[in-house]
View 1: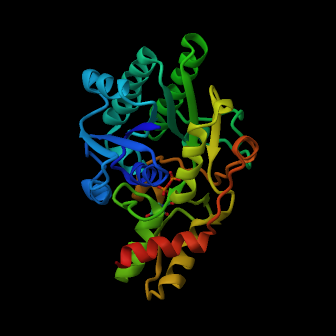
View 2 (view 1 turned 120 degrees about the vertical axis):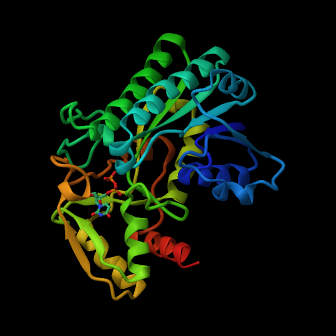
Length: 319
Ligand code: UDP
């Protein structure tokens, strides 16, 4: 296939590019380098099946021209990371709503297949364990901008499904749960690279709240395999899939494990949410994916354990 990856210079997009190229596909990355980095894709440039286009998904003509000459579009370009979203709510909404609309329109015009990256944030502060794709969503008030991310991504999902049902566009949505691995930056708040950097530099690991909240971390190499297979699965059209690792860990346990695996002398420092983010910040206590649906359709499951995942990130930051 000839794949166009929007946001392909980002953490997940660069791994997807690498995986598709190694499977013999041609890949074009469209990225405005706002949070993506050339360094993430520098090693792909010598591959003659790889192309890089610097530009924004808000540029109608550019997007149209690129969509036209590809078979499958992986739409990953988005504003991501809780801290970035709180700092730049306008950019979050514009990128995630107008950007996706621009890409969807081009895909519909040229009748291509699109896979849209969504997020486990769309479940909001729902308390079901695990979350299944058809579960209800529970979002906080519009006055708390954290929820603009979930709402904007939910809008992307509605848009994709509307195009599928009304315009017969081949759309597939996947909701990523916490994805980690080499090249992820801690700059936008993501907990694993942040803790690893803190442990390696010997400063305290900053656990927010009580640390009893838990997350499920999936290695990016497992995640991109699922995305690539979904892209070639006709039966996936028009559907939504969770992609994540059901293995759960509390944030305190995560910090302890990272201190242990790095052999660090760092301690743990507990920071109230209102200090870490903003007054009235709402976090979710648990967020566990049900992967029954994706397992059924493409027989996928994560292969790397939490320790394997953490060691890969630690090795990356050490080098
Ligand atoms: N977190 C933390 N310390 C940090 C960064 C994050 O304790 O330096 C917590 C955060 O409050 C949340 C969890 O780790 O409870 C996961 O945060 P992340 O931003 O990585 O992903 P989220 O699941 O919130 O999208």
